[in-house]
Length: 197
Image (cartoon, rainbow, N blue to C red; front, side, top):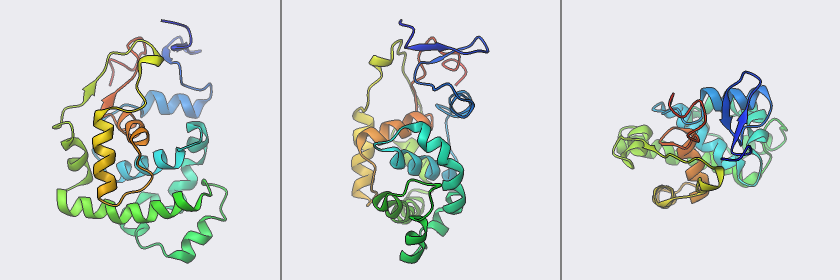
């Protein structure tokens, strides 16, 4: 295992090597990433943020996360689904989020799709965890280069979400989402969080 696969923090803990050296990034890795999520509001938030991240760094998105929460009604899907064109135009003027029209508009349309999933599947969590029959996938990667960008699971999720009308949900985005919300545990084996989550 190379030094870039794991990073030794000032607190003496080994972390996945992708973690940037700032408190926000470290807290995200240590407290959220890979923890199983069953709360629909948080699932909508993470699906939105992963879509917003496409083509950008995760650090950029983390730094704008509070702006997203404020401007998108704390990710209340029912409220976001009612945003009109004037509200979207106003959002595009606010630098506290990524000002990409397609990504902002997709958050609104995805909110409507999200509600439809809740109505047909009971909850978005039930829908999502149904892809793994309620049992998370725990990988045992030792090197960052072994962690895939997408898998058959993310391909299936992406295809189904697109069929339901979601946007900015390509397979790579879906795999990052699955990792983030703990459907998949991709902490490296040497990371202190691997066995904790």
